[in-house]
Length: 337
Length: 300
Figure 1 (cartoon, one colour):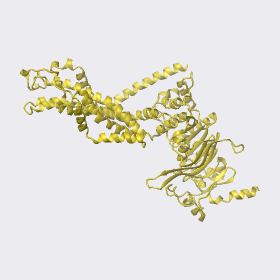
Figure 2 (cartoon, chains in turn yellow, purple; figure 1 turned 90 degrees about the vertical axis):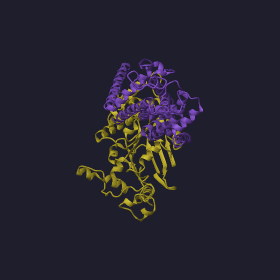
Figure 3 (tube, chains in turn red, purple; figure 1 turned 90 degrees about the horizontal axis):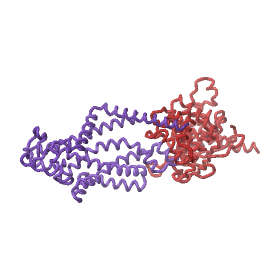
């Protein structure tokens, strides 16, 4: 891919915030606290973070499961950040989601045929003269499942197969954008690879754009076009995947990359920098002042305790939100001039 | 081509369904006591349906007087004895099952759809004014003791079987609303419900196709258990004279009439009382069996 030609932006998120009120008045869980990113047509943006970093909340905001507190979401140039319950049907057709655990995202009391038929019926997809059943069999073929699965219940098929059904449901309406919320983390390692390969194939086949939510950074190396790291409701670093893994800038990213378990010494050598991991993600209710990462940061200075850093572009398309790089943008401008 | 393929698929699905039924029956039959319950229920239902043919003295079901054979204790001729008018108690008990079963079926047919639909709507629309209206009305009805409420309602109307059925309905529906409200309000947060909403499914679809199928097991169990309890409530109403009127046989009236002759002619009151006990027990055993069967069915 690379960054030779700029593909069109299909999804633009601007300064998105999602706060949840707590039982105590005036206190909020700042699940997502002012994030901006774009997803370009045909690419995969990997949104990576620990549990509690706000990555799933971001996904739910994009898909319209609940409304935003502040900020804007544009899909194909149209503002969709309004009332999440009143999204037009055409938008629901174009924007689909695959949930983390197919054990809970497929109704146990409905057959796979009924599950797959719902989006087709809602969006009136098999037109005149075409049979619903043919379309269902075709859908199952797309995800490499045999046609007799139409009459099976989710509980009588395997976990990986269930996730394929969930993927088939998302693709039933011919969407252009799919949000994948940790689609492999509930599955056995043996089927994870199969699902990932299928997702890559389907992306090419149907020219899909993915927003891929995960906590598995190593997965992103082969899958993502660009990677964004979330920490405490904010994006710490966002960069093209190649660049991201070769020269991570943010101390948090460096920490995450050095904590990926590897087997061989050669792989260990590939790691850009060794930063020991310490501490846990703080509570999003009591966000520490200054940079949210400073209690765990090995390079924290006085300014990190007081001022929250802003996003800067260190090299084209590589953004970092850290005081260590605060001067980088101006420096580059000077060099460029 | 796909047409024949589809036929074949459907046939295989049908086989699968009968297999599911066989497996369910296997699970149910492993529990001996619930099979006993099922046999008792079937026996009671068949006796009630064919009452005119299986009872020894079908004429005794209505207005029949023969003081010559009045107040005879249990004997070979009259297994459960006769009442003061000389009517065979076994015959009258079996005929009384008819009214009891009609009443419980009638109550459930009216109450279950109403209570379930209200519970589903309130549960799915939790947090809206619709939920508030439905659930506060439900709470008001739940706050009144069901028997007192049923007594009050049926006292307002002419005492007939139908009216006492209505009275029981008034006090019965809130229990279904409560049960289903609790289930629906948690099921609506399931990811499969969210998934159907996100793809644009209508509210009726979400409520009746996504949520309702997952409530079927507890509804079914409660219904079976309730048959016995409705019969008991109906008997309580007829005990105080509300419900089926003499000379027709009703379990409650038979007990209250017989109570006057206790303890000397004990059989007049005691046998109808045992009959009530047997019916309630039978439906409870069956209900327990169904509950266990559906529970393991879910888990597999």
